[in-house]
Length: 215
Image (cartoon, rainbow, N blue to C red):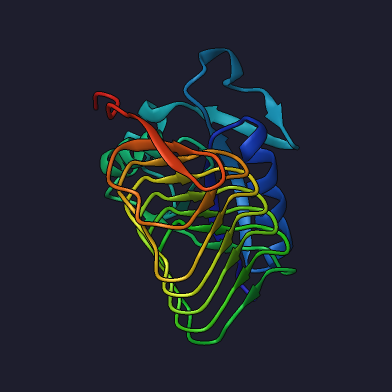
């Protein structure tokens, strides 16, 4: 069987986990890494050579490759995806994750070990469903969302683009979290959260607005 060649964008802690998933997936072959830190170029990271930076990709004339953006920051992933539209993106799902048959998962999304995604859920592009996160039935997770380790979403939860749900947070059924919002670690979300805010606590309460980083 021919393995799909993949380049991983990122050579940090998050990339270590992504690399492990890609190695275990069985149908992908990592041919190198990209990182914007110039001191990493030419070095090995997790056994793979750092080929260069963004310029290396923009000037890529080798065999066709797929990319995975191993960057934890939602806004940074969004900016990178917007610059790399000429490439395909691979989806990486850890073999211990439980994903229902009719779940839709977008390109570039990473689903980590022991995550559960139940029937009817839709996961957008370049999202992160981190270790042990639970996405129950009929949830809609938009592009560039990050569900941190141990997050629990009830059924019919909607999460807007680039939102970040912190470690161990819980969201009850039928609740929406707005685009770009951040839910603090351990929070319990029991009512809708608007766009672009930080909400923390049990129950979660909005404590401030968040200004989106400049592009």
